[in-house]
Length: 112
Length: 113
Image 1 (cartoon, rainbow over the protein chains, first blue to last red):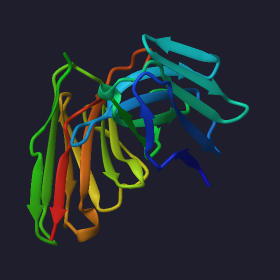
Image 2: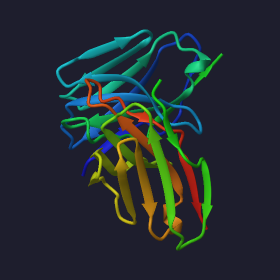
Image 3: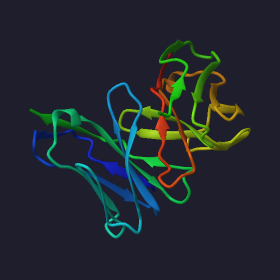
Image 4: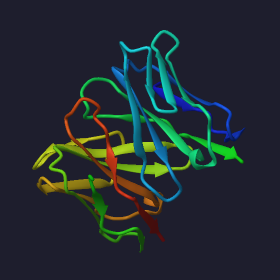
């Protein structure tokens, strides 16, 4: 069966450290992968897109990798801040941008 | 800024009632989506629409219908609400551009008693 797995346990890290979140998938052939941030009681907000032919993408303190052999994406936040505390969702898309499949998200807690 | 507005943040309905959830976007996006979000299950696609009067079933369409009479408005209808439809409902829109970025509304938390 198809699965998208994100660590359901919260990730607790100290301010200034690098947070690394994982997104593993099974029985999908994604053409691209997106990461979203969701704050409590709010809708998700788009952060980054990475395509299947891209190994790595960066945006300010964010870095995403995409390994289609391992069927995994890693999402890094460097120099993390308490304001980065939120739930982070990955979403896969298999062809055009009409259909997305979401993971259940990982909650990140950055302690001052 | 793109704005996706959902008509109600919180609703409480009784089993068997007909429920309408409205969503309006102001950026002329072709695509609109309805998701529900439940703890541990992530976001699951109910229906999406890629044009006016066009709709396609997502992964969990049973018990729901949709309407898209105008490009900016996408409505989700629960014909006869049941307790297992208690959830957070999220509307999103997107433009057929190079990132496919989804713009979400704030969500509608529905409780069915």
